[in-house]
Length: 246
Image (cartoon, rainbow, N blue to C red; front, side, top):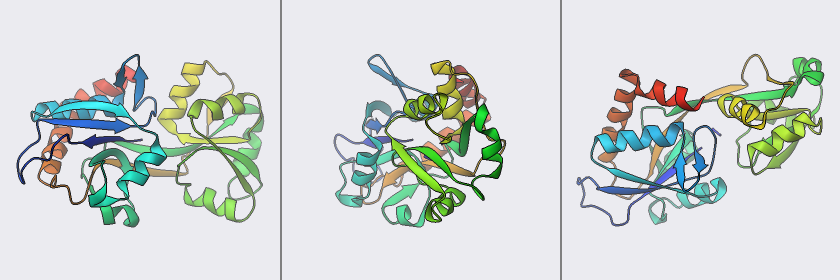
């Protein structure tokens, strides 16, 4: 999921087993999960992680960093200046340098959005037919869409922000736009676009997690944050955060 994505970095590393008092957090914007609101960074994932951290005595500071730079820095593992991030889907490649939490922050439902004038084409795609598909830069394509790309039937146009894809879609400059279902619905509402709808079934469903860079001595903190995030879901607080933004 892309799929979003904040990163926790320590101003100074605690002794092994000690709990840091502060974490600086970096993220790219993925409304409604991560958003800039004036000088503040807010959103579903931001608020959930911030509250979970506060409940175990950790103060969270959120900063923004472009997604591709964030991924590149995390891939350095123990040499990375970024020590923790969210929200990442789990892959064998990432398991090498990232420690994943067990409590998903959200599930990324990769979904194709279409202008109502092109709905008939969407019914046949991606297993048949061809199309121009707008994708946010850095997204890992779902398998069916990747297969269509390799077969020469899916022509991918990358953009840096979701809004660009949906504005193109509204002007019929794209056949489809790939997005997280929540992100797409939120973007459509914010841009006040009509005649754009999601496909009935997502192409894929990927849970996304809080992650730590391996080799930074933060392993003992992950179970605490997992437990705190689980409590937010159990007591209804996570749903309240989600409803506030959606």
